[in-house]
Amino acid sequence: MSLSIWQQPEIIRWSQILSGNFNQLLDKDLVAPANTPEQLAQTLFNAPFVVVSHGTQADPILNYGNQMALQLWSINWDELITTPSRFTAEAVNQSVRAQMLKQAAKQGYIDNYRRIRISRTGQRFLIEQAII
Image (cartoon, rainbow, N blue to C red):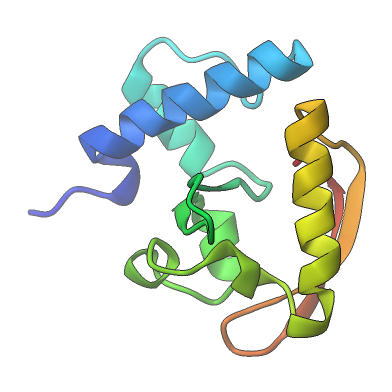
């Protein structure tokens, strides 16, 4: 029997890091406090909002996406974790996205972010009230 994505040890650890960093930067919880790291990972993965993260490479690769993100971007886990994060925006919007990431790196985060994104299948969708 294979583990669900959120049950994998590296995802449990990453969920703790994401949640802890969010709390440290914004002084609020990303999801409801959990009794165990596993419970936190499950809650985050099944949250009713999108959670994604990427690495710090020159061309960052996505390294986490919760169930809502997988559905919205029409992608499976194995595809997600090999996708450069720039591909979540259309080519014409990638320079705007790059500027936003520079601003977020300088400030620590950006809140109330709003932009059009594109799924793996070419479907456009609007993200609103995002925290980067």
